[in-house]
Image (cartoon, rainbow, N blue to C red; front, side):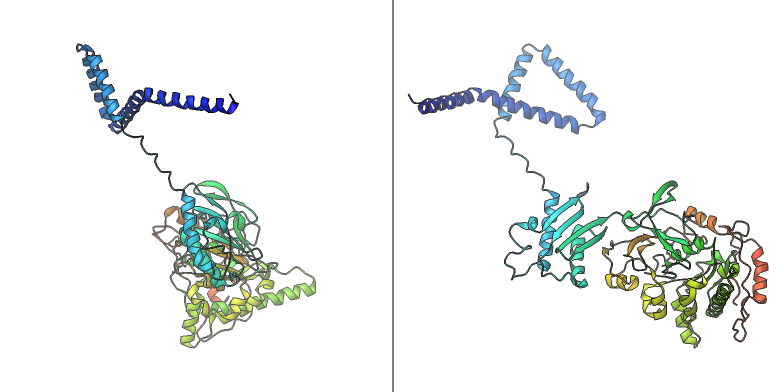
Length: 547
Ligand SMILES: Nc1ncnc2c1ncn2[C@@H]1O[C@H](COP(=O)(O)OP(=O)(O)OP(=O)(O)O)[C@@H](O)[C@H]1O
C-alpha cells in the first residue's frame, strides 16, 4: 500500500472519529453553553442590583438553597431542572460576534480625505492622489491622534499642480483641515513647497493663568506675554496659579541697540490691547518715565495717574497735543545733548539717557477729533520720537483697534517694527497687522489677551498677554487687581529715583495753554509727593489737569 493511500485512510478515520465525538459530546456542549448563559444572566442581574439590595438578595438565595436541600429529593430535582433549563437555553446558535468598534482614526481620516478631494483633485490627473479607490492612505503619510481621538499631527501630500503659493488656495485647505479636525484648537500649517507636502500640527493652548508680576529680564527687555516652547529661545521663572513654573516668554528688547524700538499693537475690540499697554507700562516704570495717552478716554489707565515716573495720563485732545509736542521737543533736546556730549567726549547727563516711553492707547480716536476740530493730528506729532527715538532713548507704543488700521499714518506703520495682534482676525488682517503671513490658523474662540507677536523680521509667534487687569475695575478678580496694585510704584518703593524734570527747551505754547515743565509741572511735583494709595473701596486718584 502506498504512503498516499495510508495518509488518506488516516485522514478519513480521523474525520469519522471527530464526527462521532462531536455527536457524542453534543448534549454536553449544549448544556455547557446553557449553563454559561445562565451564569452570564446571573452576573448581569447581580451587577444591576443596587448595592443596598444585594444583602437581602443573597440572603433569599441562601434560604432557597437551604430549602431545596431540606426537601426530599430536592437537590436531585433541582439538578435535573437546571440541566433541562440549560439544555433549553443552550440550544440556540452561538451568539454572533459583536462587530468591532469602528476605528476613529479611519473614520476621521476618510472624512478629511473626502473633504479635501474637491480642492486637490483634477479630472485630467491620470493617477490622482485624491479621489482614487485606495482612499486616504495614498495621500496621507503619517498621522497621530490623542487619547480623546482628536487629530494632533498629520502629514499629507498634495499634487504638484496645486497652487500652494497662493494664500487664498492655502487658506481653503487650512479651513477644511481645521473644520474636520476641530475648530476649538489652533493649528500650525507647515507648507513644504519643494516636496508638495503639508504638515499639520494641533497646538496646545497657552497658559492663561499668568498674572502681572516682576519678570526676570534684563534692563530694557519687556515681556509682551508668553508663547509655546517653539516660539521662544528661553524660559523664565514665573508664578503661575500660585506656584512657581518655567514659561517661554515673548521678549521685546528696547533701547538704543534695539532694531525694533517702537511697537504697534492692534486688536479686536475687548481683546486686551489696553491690558497690554498696562502690562508694558508696569514693566517700564522701574527704569523709565512715561507719558500715557488714553485716546478712548475710558479711564482704564487711571491707576497710573500721579505715580512716580508717570509724567501724565492724558485723555483729552488738548492735553494730548501738549504732551506730544513736549515729547517731540524733548526728543530733539535729548539728541542735541547727546551729540554735544559725544563731541565733548563726556558722559551724557542722566536726564537725557533715562528712557522715556510714550504709550498711546487708541490714538486714532483723537486723530478723528483733531481732524473735526481742524487741529494737528496727534499721530503727526509722533514723527520725531518715532524717527529719532532710538538714539534719544524714547520708545513709542501704540495700541489701537484693528478696524482703525487704515487710520494709522504710514510713518507710524513704517517705524513700528515690533508688532502684536490680539483677538480673532482674518488671515488678511493678521498679515496686514504683523507684516507677514501667519502659518497658524486661530481657534474659533480665543481668550482675552490671546494673539500673535512679530518682532522685526522674525516669524510670528503665538502670544498670551499676562492678565494685567485695571485695578479700578470692580468686576475684575480681586487677586488679579492685587497683583497689579503690588506693581504700582510709590515714591518710596520705586527702584530708581525719578530723574530730575527735564529742563523744558522753550516749549511751544498755544493760546491758553500752560508750558510743559512750567508752573503746572511744579504744582505736579508737589502733588506727586503725596503718596497715592490705591484702595479698592476708595479711589483718591484725581486725573491730572490738562497741560
Ligand atoms: N491677558 C488678559 N488676561 C486676562 N484678562 C484679560 C486680558 N486682556 C484683557 N483681559 C480682560 O478683557 C477685558 C477687555 O480688556 P481690554 O480693556 O484690555 O481690551 P481692549 O482691547 O483694550 O478693549 P477696547 O478696545 O474696548 O478698549 C477686560 O475685562 C480685561 O480685564
